[in-house]
Image (cartoon, rainbow, N blue to C red):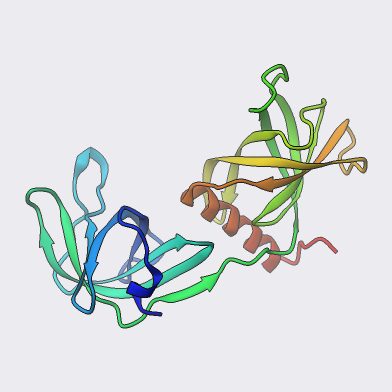
Length: 220
C-alpha cells in the first residue's frame, strides 16, 4: 500500500530498527512526508538526549500501528538534520506492508498481577493471576472480589518475553464474571477485554502470546 493512502496523522509513534542491528528498536515520531520524495521523522534519542548515530544511506525498517493494523516499510536515511532540532529525511518507500491485527487464539498463562479497580475506588488493590490470554483479552482470577462487569481494571506485572523482562501495565474492561476457577486459592474470576494499550505494552503482550503459541500452549 502507498504510504499516502494510509492517511496516518503527524506525530504517530514509530519503531525504528537498523537492519545492521536487528532486534534493537528505537522510538521516533512521524513529522510528515512529501509523496514520492521523502519521509521526515524525529531522530531517535538515546540517554542524556543524545541522538542515535546514523549515516547517510543506512538502511532502516520503520514499524507502527494504525487503525488496528500493523504497518512496516524498509527505507534508507537520505539526510541527517541537527538544526533547529534533530530529525531525519528518509527515502519514500515504494510500498508499506499492512497487516490487520486479528484476534488471536487464547494461550495458557500463569501471570501474577496486581489489580487496581479504576472504576470502583472502594475496592482495595488485590493480587491475582491471568490464567489464559490473547492479544485482545484475558481470563483473570483473584484472591478477593475485585470488580463488576463494566469496571475498568489496571493490571500490573513483570512480563518476560524471550530474554527480556519488563514491567507492563494493561488496562482492561470487565466483560463478564465467571464461575469456573483454575487456581486453587481463587475466589473470583473475570473475563477481560483489553482497552487501548501503549505500543510497548502491546508489543510485550503480542510477543508473549506468540511465544506461547509457538510452544503449543494454546487453550483447547
